[in-house]
Image (cartoon, rainbow, N blue to C red; front, side, top):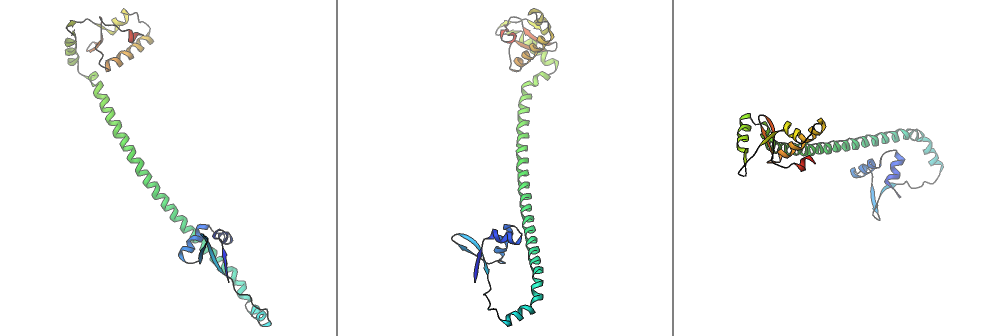
Length: 211
């Protein structure tokens, strides 16, 4: 006589995981059938026996076999535990593979970021590279810059510029220098770099920088 039992109930009865039960079903160890879209384990119940003196005698003769059944249950339980451990090992192996693939992907992203940073750094250095030019470059630049738009220009050293605009406090001078360097990097024509240092067009206006 057939008896249907849910996999989760049978797993609890044996003390193993539900995954181990499904693994046994897949391997054909347990017989299963689908009823209304749900999977059940098929258990075969023995037909009831008529109690007779002979049956009682047979039961007495098989007493030792009955005593040994717990050992069989323990053996089955241990086997189920081994299968559960095997399933967990496979799961760990899959997780390691997933982590390896993730690490490879992250490393590729890091390499792309490094490459992008290198390109940005190269572009930035090319813009400010003239700050590292030799003195001859600045000397020639000073000569060329004396005449701008057809007019001769007078250039003030930064120290003289600060005196002209009465900028004497160190913090204000430091703030001014930062703004002038920023303007110079943007190719501001009012600012010139020479071997003597930074020079500023004495005829230009600096409201935007001094504000």
